[in-house]
Image 1 (cartoon, rainbow, N blue to C red):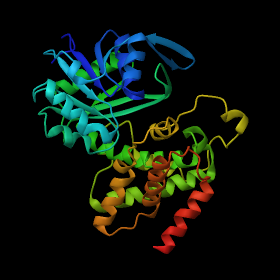
Image 2 (tube, rainbow, N blue to C red):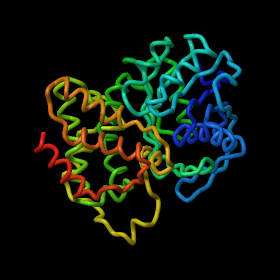
Image 3 (cartoon, rainbow, N blue to C red):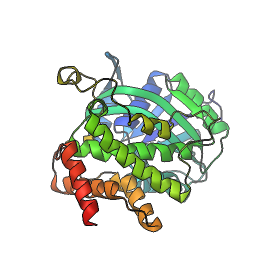
Image 4 (cartoon, rainbow, N blue to C red):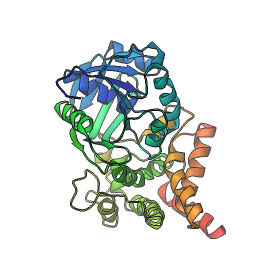
Length: 349
């Protein structure tokens, strides 16, 4: 594969991240088609607005509402950008239209997606993305922070396809790197994403969470529990120290021990930009599915297997499940209330 070739990118699951990636690739001149829910398909065809650093970019992207509407081309590459709970359905739809040689990049949170894709496709790539995208309506996407992407072969290694994909993403404005250690990076990001549940339950956006000392202590405890389980399991959460990486989760976690650089100031923090987790957005928008089972749930399951208590992640998972089942809004508990609840349940256990 070469970036000189007129490759077409099939973005399967064009929500916040998928639409943003599709829009930026399209603006850079790449050929893109999205598979998206009907409302999002319509918005992409009419034109989505991408807001970043006060600048608004409008772009139209070709889109369909189901993979069966695609006309496969020989140079197609698929980016799966769905939530983890929708990966198997996405893979099943794609295999009905393509043979097993289709290159598939799992540009998703969680660590199970590549294995699922690998059951049906031979060329599977792990994709790490640091692109905060807030999409509270189909036609408008705010990008508060992040443009980092890493792609590598699954389960490890790097090849020309990964390098060429990163070259084209770089041309589209991403800080993209090909790496043999993307799965380790994704385990590290899973630890960071354990607190998607914490911010959803408290209703905090990321900037507010990072400025609140009590919330920082709570997020630290959640991450430390996750790292304790993964270390016991012998799972690498970072590449070797001499390898480049857009994420170093241990360093990120250590920073939570320090006081916030900018203490919480309601007057300042009510101003944008606000970075909301995808889980927060799903709950706010009234969706019934979420991916905590593929984040906190993986830590809980591994902890049970190893005999390691996981009161923080198991409580977060239990509360998030209830909030989605009952259609509750983000902000059910304040950080101190949530921390007290977790500790009380740990004592009872």
